[in-house]
Image (cartoon, rainbow, N blue to C red; front, side, top):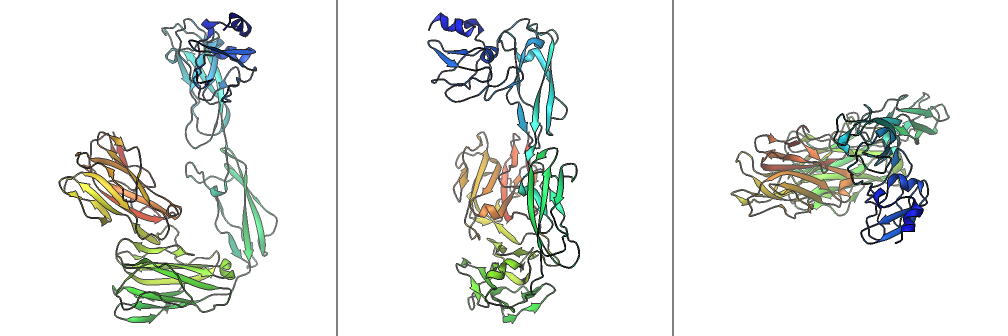
Length: 559
């Protein structure tokens, strides 16, 4: 281990004062002087018994895990941790500024890289000896964001002077998910038809401003004639890159009308009645269940058909779909329909959308679903009383269509272990108790009879233990039993294909506060650090784009 090795590297043991714990060489923690590492031809890495020689250049130190350290001032390092040394009288204007990350990428949040100051003698200056001042705006993308470092007056290490360095926040890439056209398709009418372009910041959810945050380039053409047009969005300021969307103008396809029947409690088969949008099957205001239905296209050809299936009381979702006037559901069994799905078939299906909505017990008319999406309820024992169906050229919508109105309302089924009462029977809707001042100690959740494959996972915050390490799933226990420990908060999320179509919303009933606001998809609901018990939980499953079932204010309270 030879003294000549130190001589060749131009530094000795006393210079090795900065510890880079991210550089592992043969399992050792190397000791490398930062400034020397950028200048010498050889870097010595040592522990108490071994010295290992590694080669370096003036820009990088190469080790067996390929970690790269760059620069000589305002350097950037990966996983760099420096051991603070007791250094007297160092001058900041002669020091090196070391950033943990030199170039960040815009993410909608304030970002301030951590800074370490290394003296000219390769000694780390204690952070309490100087003050770091960052720019006012460390959120938006910008180059050369200046950081000022100034010695604290009368500090113990007698550090003096000041220095400056800079870092950058780079713009994020524009993605197709950020860009929405008011319509992807229009139908020729001899007038110019340009869609409205909306671009949203994916990190903040805010709608961006054209000309400030992005530009729009309209592709060639007059936007009157039938054809495909290219619309290109280019990012500005916090975003960079381009995204191109296709927009089509087509000839209006032939109108399609829908007919059908509903097998109604007490009334038997009833022919559908025409509506402003299409056809209505069943009744409203009479509290009568639909038990079966048929749907048919009056303009059916070999290239366009319709299929549908029902969610039936006691049976769940039918395994096979009925088609073109066949019956879906049951007759003579007094079983209510609770949900439905409808889709178009055939080559011409690409030219049309099928919309449908249900009138459900308790809820009345739910929002519109389309093209195979589920409509109705699951897990609530609510009858369908009426169904409205229409088929429209692709891109058109029913007159009262609102994409934020939920077409489907599902509920989780749950079992709660409750203070004094023990394990309660499974319930749908509110799980646990309210008005009894009893703590929940554990929960088990399931999502039976859903229209897609998948399940539910949940995690609880337990008195004294905090958040559980693992998520429970599909009926497994989360929490404790027999320990007298209260649940204080929960997180819930969906899994599998179900999570691609739906969000899970949930709220808890808390000691002192009552019902919390609604949280969704893994967010926290309840309290932490306030020693408050949760007494009940309600879990609702809604389509991804649907509005929250209620206020989201104060979903989680903390000390």
